[in-house]
Image (cartoon, rainbow, N blue to C red; front, side, top):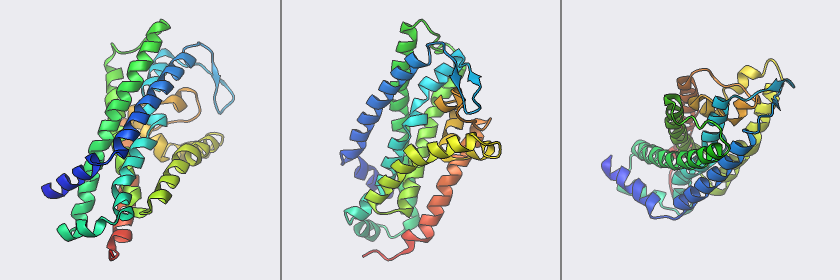
Length: 269
């Protein structure tokens, strides 16, 4: 197993894509945190999906700003996770990989382990970027930063965990959709368009509110205990962080199982 882990680690660090995506994520999250920190600190009530005024508390502002990586930036670790698998098919390196170690279960386990590590790195730096810029903006506006509260640091730690799980989801998607271009298009389309639309539609109906909590993005946000969407009244989240963790992890388990019994059982040319 150690040899498989080392091999997967080298496949990541010897390419430029992962750190390019990391740089883009850090810059983007810093920008969004600054904008949200300013916008949510203006003291104006927003209108949620129920058309009732929603007053955002100081604690909700802090959570929404600091967890922006989980709300809007999880597409980066999920894409990196998918690339860990799809790159093998694109560059025809899967055959020599399996010749060196024919165990496909060990291959998947190694990719999941390395993917989780990369996801945690993305989560750590993305959270640092959003917290650093967000806290600076809040302080300049003479608003509470929440950095003196243990609950805030707990939220930050759980944000890192959530993005680590998202990288696992990416690896799982890659085992199902092995075409690199198709996998990236599907992930971007779902995370940036399909799920936000579904969450809005579900939030507008009495029967859909409970369903919306179990969508992947909402589950990821539930891990942190708050988000931009929940603070503005656009969606509801599961009440416990571990519930969101288990729901999001379940998506990964199902996708990996599907990929293992379909794509990864086929003969490799």
